[in-house]
Length: 217
Image 1: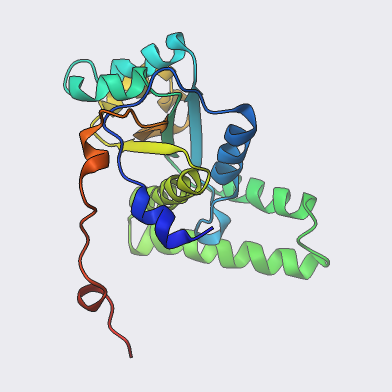
Image 2 (image 1 turned 180 degrees about the horizontal axis):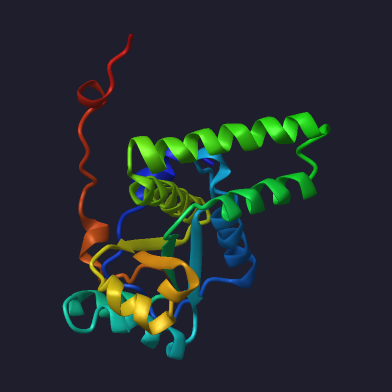
């Protein structure tokens, strides 16, 4: 595997081949990417709604049919579609649940290590809650880390993707009752395989040069 070649080949798909489906084995790995993504202080402030049936994708498409109809085919023709949602809070109860899961998974050999982890996590949470006053922005940054991991992971698996912020997140929140569950939709990612007629697959990739974006110290 050459990662550079994979990254050069991936792009945001504009047309999915509706006849091609992601295998169960490959999609199991996609779900692993979602679950194992990094986040600040292991916050994991995300939830994912996944549809791979016409009925499920039609429900997600309610988030595009009014203001973003050009994105609707990217939902309906994809193999799988993921609604990416962020938590609307990171309160003490949630932070404690992270700590208890870590303890259950064997991360703390001694109680003092667990206490130190809790104190450190609360320090950062309180920094964003009281000093910077940007808790929701901080949470959403962690969710976007996950989406970046998803796009790269899918490309490594040979799966095409299209991330979409062109969606009515309020409509998605309402359709799936997300706010009542403590979440709000941020974006969608459609997954599947490119159609031969997709114009975007024929265009050269365009990025700034290494010299423009990297300064060696």
